[in-house]
Amino acid sequence: MAITEPAASELRHYAGLLAIELDPQRSDPAGTPPEPLSVSAATALAGHLTKDLNPILGGIEHLGLILPGALYDQTEILRPGLPLLGVLAELYRGGSPGSTFVPRLIALGTERGFFPVAAINPLRRPGSGPLLLLPFCFVGPGDDIARLARVMEDNLLQNGQVSPATGEAVRQAFGLAVLNLSFATVGDLCALLRVQLEANDFLPLWELLEHAWFERPGVRAVVLEAGNRFLVAGDHAHTPFYTFDDWAQFGPGRALPATELDEGYRRWARAQRQYALALEAYGLHVRRVLANPRLEETLATVDDDAALAAFRDIPCLSGDYLVERIFHNDSEHPERQMLVTHQADAELGTLAYTVTTLDADGQLVRLEHHYPLQPQGARVIADQLIQRCVEQNTERQVLHPGRLLYSETGRSLRAATMADVSAPTAKPH
Image (tube, rainbow, N blue to C red; front, side, top):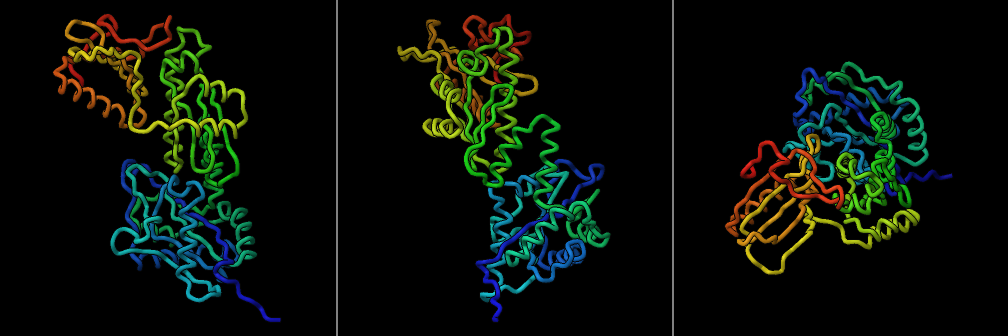
């Protein structure tokens, strides 16, 4: 009987990681990860890794192996569909001549400081430590990879010792102060992150991320204790955004006593920012929609699929900030005075700017609340307001009460008065 070699199209892959824990005493926490290695340095390092992995995994000579001579943080590895690992497998297949499988070791390096394939270029963001990861990907026939996967999940983290020679090679190649090195699977990395998030009361965040990373079917929805709602489908996370007034009047804060609205909204805003930043960091597209009473009622009464449809029916918020217009005088009289109330929290920073403008007769022209949607949004709002005053020759005053100011009877933000601040600032900085 003739034996048919597997074609490249029939190959499977399974990935592992070399986890590099930096020494916090000798590493700059805001430092930039090193650039990718040269071809010769990457090849030498690959040789060290294969010598370590061969006995740990019970022999790997019958499998292909590809690794980049580069380091990544975990948000670059753990993204929806794990694309970096898939690209490595595709590069192996593309670099293997012929239609049959021949085990090869491929080490990717560059003499230019970056790879020609953009999908595997490390982002090298400052502050990416203290854990950096060097991924490697085994490629081979389906049955062989299935057996390897079981061995890796059972043994790699528990029994996978990195040799002193490999440790020294890593230190020399990347110029790092290393505290510890270990082999791990992507599953091990996920389990570690779950433990960390659960210990800090972020288990719902893990549930959303895990659903996206491994491309689970359907919708994963969570509602946080503070009333925040997130739905993940594919690589998109859908969430309603509430202004203070909406949150207090028909949103998650509607049942709270008026005296607790300040603390409640700050708690909601904190969770909203934390989850949105984390989801975006791990490669999800966060799609914010402006909450409204009809959406609120729908989300409370339908299943997750219907809730997702309701989100998709609403245009998403875009840009750096949102303007909530409470009053606009149609007289078109020019603005001559602008009072800006900086609605802020000591921990969260800017939550909103309440903007009140008057005409030359002291009549109200506009009452608006400007909400940052992105980290840079507060700065953009301030610049826009300054420019607006310059263009209209408007006198400007900014008050910093250091807290949220709102009407308890109206359950809505209000502008500051001189009595609300101890040291008003005449101009925004």
